[in-house]
Image (cartoon, rainbow, N blue to C red; front, side, top):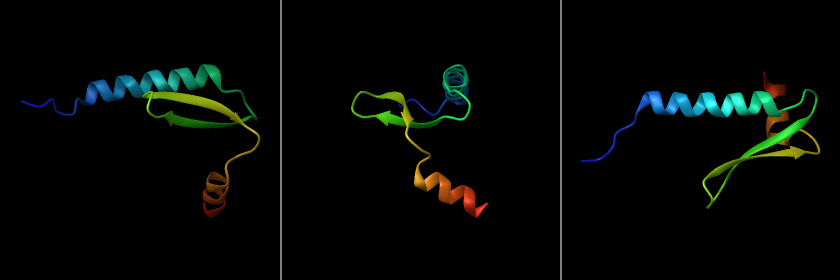
Length: 61
């Protein structure tokens, strides 16, 4: 018997990540949030500028 998707667990994880970001990210600074494989963790790196893919997406809005 496999373990199915558990919505509550997913939402709790998302809440933890968003709270961590809210307490860590500083206004007017650029960051990259990445999944660090194979260590299965999230890393928040300060970036010298906003990544081009995000800049292009915002320009399309």
